[in-house]
Length: 422
Image 1 (tube, rainbow, N blue to C red):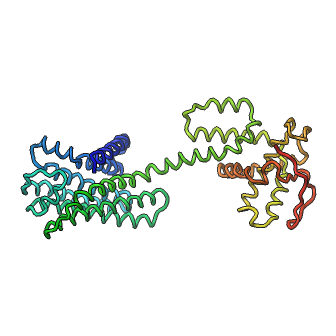
Image 2: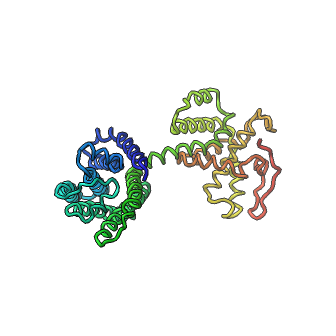
């Protein structure tokens, strides 16, 4: 791996840790907040201190050859412990059981973290090794035990967390399930890393040279695994916000067809209100303004809404059989859209309108009532209505039932003279 492959993830995780500091400050008593921050911090430290330039600098500053070895092993064991503790507390359950499980893992990894420097002091590692400490000292007393202790602790964490995440993922949905599956991938990479390291060490014990597994294959695996694990923990926290952000912009865009149709009915006050929104406004603000403008425009259209058009359009759609439209709700939306389009393009004074007199006779308020009933559930219906405007039945030039005064049989629907709506 290049040096940048270590430092770039370290910088990214450090920025993530700094971003989480306010949460840590205000929620210090929450174990989830503490463990998330600790995991991100130890992940950043793993990348930083495992880089060969940093290893060399630490050894030089301390004056101890291979001092970075137990330091990196200790940080990695701390990262493994943070993963386990976070999963245990994140999953929850009876408070006593969660606390007991947390204490057991803390005790186990406290022993591991204590044993690593003790074994290093008892051993003898005078030759500095920047990349192959594991295999070079695989047969050295005490250093060998230090390497095995660190690798076994990492392997145990990878196995347990993968198993726990897989079991939990089967019982949940949404962003939490997505985050757990990402964690499974990350912990799986950590498992491959630990097995790769141990394989190279065991090969040394048997007189074989598999050092390339430890020096070439393992580093990029653990680097990717650390990033994937961190992303897996952050995804359920960030995912809902990203989903809401994307959903807000998507809804804003999807309402564009209805907004453009109604733009000629808006008063100047509406346009002024719309133009007063700063360019940096977020999707929620823009969506609220667009919805408000649409509802105001529809309210002004109430006297022009001809329920006869809606009913005859709905009769044509439902009379064609179940394959004509995906659902009855969609047919209702198309019928409402046809009524709204006729009210907009057929209003007095429209250059393409042949009707410049009073509102249509059938605009007795029933069209407004039908529109209100349809939109009652909220934004989802408004989006369905906007989409329905793209239907051929609601588009200009569609068979307009305004002049159709006969009830057409489903098998032979009447084809009245089309009336241009644009």
